[in-house]
Length: 98
Image (tube, rainbow, N blue to C red):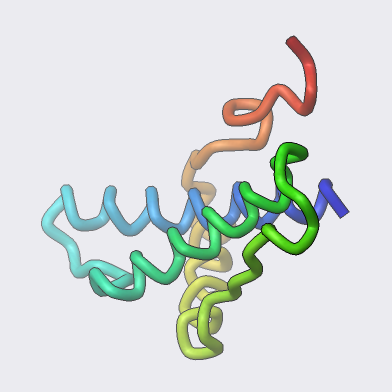
């Protein structure tokens, strides 16, 4: 389960970073402001699921709405097709290592 969460966190981070990079280059953005908020809400939810300090009933679960999920998947396909660098899990998480 944690592996799927880490992968989803990586994917969500990469679509946001890709969108930001497009904007900084003067190209049209992928996600509107409130769509970015929804993506970050899901990221927060996933991080709370990884946090062992929370009781199960305290863990919040949130998924982006379906219309945003379609854009996330499309953007991931564009990232793969263009070989855009992005980030990987090892750059974010130590997976329990200290």
